[in-house]
Length: 207
Image: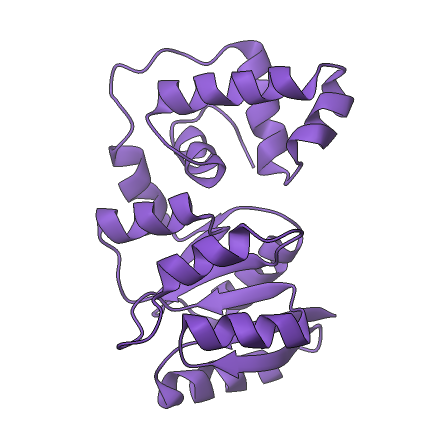
């Protein structure tokens, strides 16, 4: 069972999402919150696997700050941004804060369900328009990734942590971190999620 926390300041939106999630037998809605601060309180109590997070929530703590605080915790749940905002600034702020995915509220229910399942498996989830915007920020003259960098990025896309990657490839964790720094620089991104999105859209790796 995938435990989900829903964070949105609009009761009507929460009601609609609650109805969508209720039709999915493998997903359990364990809590709701109207802003980021309340989400952190519910998270401590309910321990969800996935947080569906809006970006702008009135005068309360916004989604990017809440995502940053959640991602900084030990063994955090995956945060899926679910919003109407799709500007470059919004997208980059969210993924750099540690969001595992970014969806738009006009996504069909089946896409939302698939995204929750994918995030629960440790996968990166990006709506096509969002992935396209991230790709647009990748430098046109970026150097090609080395074979080892591609291998590491593919394992990142599978949801593996640096320690797991080091064991899989029989290299040190410090070496993994160094390769990822090089990857971020070559792709012009600042996070693992953004690197995977850019690499997928550029055809450098496949999910």
